[in-house]
Image (cartoon, rainbow, N blue to C red; front, top):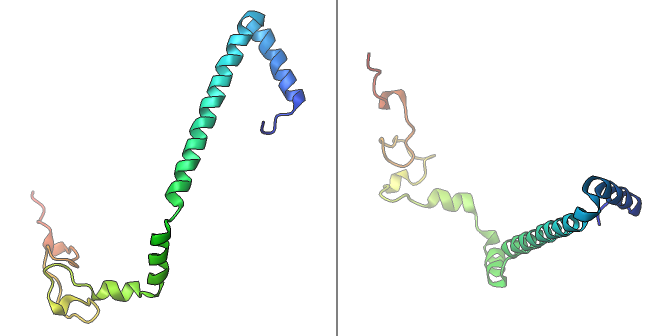
Length: 117
């Protein structure tokens, strides 16, 4: 029951008896037991869902193990964006600057509207 020993439990019980009285103490204990049971149920459910989400099915694990030798940065650099020309596939070798609205374009001060006075 956590880090609460029998001495601490006895002190809590005596204080509850003094504060609540003998008539209301059984009702308070039942209420507290329901709350503890609900918290445990929610905690167990959460842990189970988290473990299920983390677990990788065997088919996906095999795919991940087989794809470990793929060079992701090179693959990403070689992938052409939709509508991009063959010269703009690799931004490091391309001498042209993408126009506004195209992939790879960075906004400059010239792209912004001048302030209106």
